[in-house]
Every structure is written in C-alpha cells, then in structure tokens.
Length: 540
Image 1 (cartoon, helix red, strand yellow):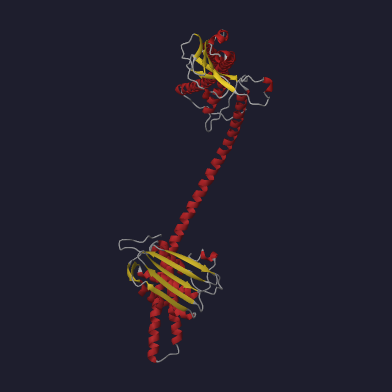
Image 2 (tube, helix red, strand yellow; image 1 turned 180 degrees about the vertical axis):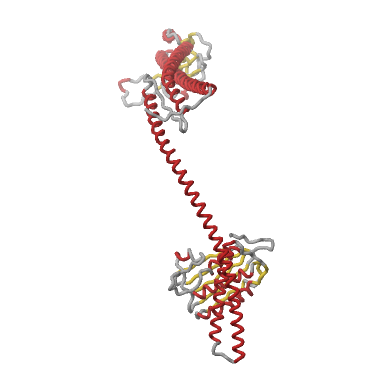
C-alpha cells in the first residue's frame, strides 16, 4: 500500500514516556479486571456459603422440630398422670440424638415433671396456654450455641361414653396438658457452616487466581498489538500518515482494526493531497480577487470624492449667476412697474419662479454633496417648536393650495422650546410638507407635533397616492423617485427624502414610514432631547 509517509522525529525521552504510558495502561487494566474477578469470586463464595448454611440450619431445625413433636406424643401419659417416670424411656431415646443435650416435660401448672440431660441454658417454664396457636412445635433460640424447641401436649376429653356413639362430624374437645422442651446444641451446626464457608472461600480464591492468570494471558495477547497500533496512531499527524503492520497471530479483532485503520490512512492521505492542491489554488484566487476588490474600492472612493467635490464646486458656481438673475429680475420688475408697463409682469414672475426652483435644486445637490463628504455641521439652539411649525406651514401654503389640499395643524403639545438645529429641522418640515403636497390632490394634509421630556415627535400624514412596499425600500436613496421614467407625472430630483433622512440622523433621531397605495402616507420623525454639552452623532 503506497502512502504519503513523513517520519516524525521523537526524542528518547518521548519514546520512554510513551512506553511507560502503555505499561501503566496495561497495569491499570490488569488490576481493574483482576479486582473485578476476585470480587466476583468472593461474592459467589459468600453467596453459596450463605445458601448452604441456611439449608443446613433449616435441616437441623426440621429435625429438631420432628424430634420434639415425637417426644410430645410420647409424653402425653406422663402429663396425664403427673409422673415423669412414664416418659423416662422416651426421654432417653430422644437424648440419643447427638445434637440433643436436654429434654424436659412441664405441666400446664408450670411444674417440671421431667428434666433429663446436661445444659447451661435455662429451661422454658413461662409458656402458658394462650401462647399455643396449634399443636405444632416452635423454635425458641435462646443463645448462639443453643436452640430450645417446645411443643404443646393435648389429650382428647374422656366422659366414659361409648366411642361408637360419637359421630364423625361431631367436634372433639381437647384438653391442654402441658408442653415438652428439647434443647439442641448448635455448636456442631456452626462448625459445619464455618467449614463450608472456608472451603467455598478457598474455592473462590482459586477461581479468582485462575481468572487472573487467564486474564493476564488474554490481555497480553490483545494489548501488545493494540499498543503497537496506538503508537502508530500517535505518530500520525497532519501531513504525516503512517500505516501499521500487525502480527498475523494477533486476535482477529485487532487485525480487522489495523486493516480498517490502514484503509482510512490511505484515503486521508489522498484526500489531504487533493485538499492541499485546492487550498493553494484557492489562496491564489482569493489573493487575486482581493487585490482587484481593493483596487475597485479605491477607485470608487476616489471617484465618489471627485464627484462630491465637483457637485460642491458646480453648485457653488451655479448659485452665483442664479442669484444675480433673481436680483436683476426684481430690478426689471420694479422698473416696469414704475413705467406703468404691466403686460410683462407674468413673464417676469415666471422667470423668478423658475429661478427659485432651480436655486432650490442646486441647494439640494449642494446639501447631498456635503452630507456625502461628511462636511455637514450641526448648530443646536433653543427653538420654539410651535413657532417653527407655523413658519414652515406659511412657507408651503401656496404649494398645498395649488392642488386644492386642506392643511390641519395639531401643535397643542408643542408650544415649548427644544434644543435642536433650527435650519435643519425647518428643512425637514419643508421637505415633508412639500412631498405631501406634491403627491396629494384635493386631500387632507395633517401636521402634528409633540414635545415631551425625552424627545420631539413630528408626524406628517396625507391622503395622497401612497407608496407600495417595494418602493418604500428605495425612496430614501439619493436621486430615486417612485416613477423615474422620462414621462413621469411628478417632477423633482429625488433628493428631498434622502436629505430629510440624513438630516434626521445628523440630529440623532430616526424617521419611519407607514403607507399603503391609494390610502396615503405617514412620515414620522423622532428626535431625542439633547443638552447643550451633547453633540449629535454624524454618521458620515
């Protein structure tokens, strides 16, 4: 398998560190599995010992109960005649059991009728009739070394009647005579249980050692090739791919892992080679495109600067002759009036009107060029908003009445001073009112203003043609109009709303628009209150 191989240099200290790390990993893994194996073996030994001890204890318990019940049946005659001699033979026979050390017979009056055997435990002598629920024997462990098993003794009542006359379903009355007690020495049981526990523990430890030996051999066979594969993987870095050769005698799983790793390394090497080539090509293209973009940006900025300078210069040059034309037109008009010539008055007024219109266009171009050049300054002062609104409406009343529109002014909450640039706010009002008057015919234009402790809010609402959503996104751009064709109905340069937006931003405020086609438009201007020390942010 041909691979791109680049050897990585490792110091002797690094190699020893890797070997120690691998050995540490093997030791930890072996220790963990060994502890787990020993733990399982010990748990199994304890569990089996517990079950065996329980079975032995229950066996001895059953044997003792059976012996006690048999002794109780043989002791009925002794209790009936209050004579322990009648049960002497039965007691000796019971004592023949190796674990039974003592027997006793106790009457219903708690009198010991028979007491045979040797014991260090006190005989049960406090049981009464109410404690016996049935004829079965009961176990009373009195200490770790002794069990006491007691069984009640009953006899059928005899009234000298004929037994043949007693019916099968007739209830037979029993008489409580007393009880018998057998004491069993449990030392043999405890010894037997301890012996089983020790044997199981030895067997469990043997299984644990065997498990550890088998585990060690298995882990060695598994981890040795795995360590070799891990070392190769650690040496594999970006651009330095190394394959591995695994001993065929290793486990099948490790061989499969090595094969998959070699295949992966081969594919990664091919992919890395292709990516490096594509990366170099991409870096070259990006560098070339970046250089072109920087050059284009610089060219555009230089052209925009020249355009702004040209507009500023040309508008300044145009304003001077226009002002002269206006001045001479006024002089000519006065001379004609003095001479009594009135036939040319309308022509002179047209000259004045068109010159004023042209001067307004030039001023707008000059303003937008200053804004783009970042040379528009703000000069704030205390201004009475209501007076400024009245002055602005008086200026645009002729334009509003030209299209038979009505003007409604709401300034009840605006009769107070506000710190703002008067000229720019006046220009904003003129542009908004002129725009509403131009696009509204025989409608209503509403101007409202509110001055509070935080801001100035001006709203110009009309019932004109309205603006669709697509056009709302471009009307604030310079030289853009709703209808930009040569046959458009409404004339203008398309600078009014753009200048209004920039002036609003220069004053630190914002402007919003709400409009629907054939429903009218509403322009709202929000200017925050500023102190004399504050300076509005210039976005340019």
